[in-house]
Length: 365
Image (cartoon, rainbow, N blue to C red; front, side, top):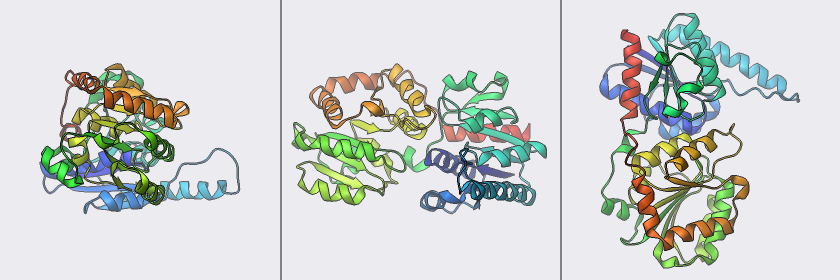
């Protein structure tokens, strides 16, 4: 069986694709898989691809406004389309699995044209524009949230709920004592995880840094802060003067250690983050990224409706607001217990295996 997987450039697209490929190799040893990514995601792929065969295409989002660079973007778009055509002709897959983003469009449409089987996966509650378009051409569309079912505008027999695949190592939960030792943390304290997505968030980083200056009960707090590369040096220098135990990372691959001990997460609301919070049953304070066609807002509101998260709009986020919300949780541990109870009714499935099963069922008919 030959499976071609194509993903957009963000971690929210790439990590589910990698999780799918890991599960595929485990369940069907000897399957020939190829992952196709945009060139601008090379760094993220090198961090996480773990020996998976990868090819890169030149395609990039086409900017609608006219500028001196418009011609350059147009050339790259056409180059990426031709590269996609050559890849599909040479590889001759049994199925193409798309994980969203404009990068998926040429390969999925070429697969449809050549009568190759196709599967689409949507990570967010509100489907992206590329997936809305491609859903009309694929054999099946897999969704991460049941709320997405009616938003793809296709017949329901072509929609399957699989959840959002998580990396294998993330699903292997370490013991609490092992995770505490990993960070050098003590038992019996309030453990907080601050993360702004795969690239970090400058606004969350700045507001949290300011909020910690006069935070109450500092000795009770232990913080894991994943800053992204751009703010790491600044935060590392600033945290030297703050009397809180903080472990700072620009990127943390071993997220299972953080999730295994944290009492609360302060984060953006990307699809992968939401799926991880659901899996580990962790209450969250979510600040949706405002410039992603409201995808993150819908993701965050999904958790809020079930009582699993408090949502702060990005334009309302200040250091004082963040500090006040954080103090509410530190002073009222019972609030966290009540929020965790909301996780119980939500079904937990192995999304990676479910998506692999969906792909194989399409191939074998």
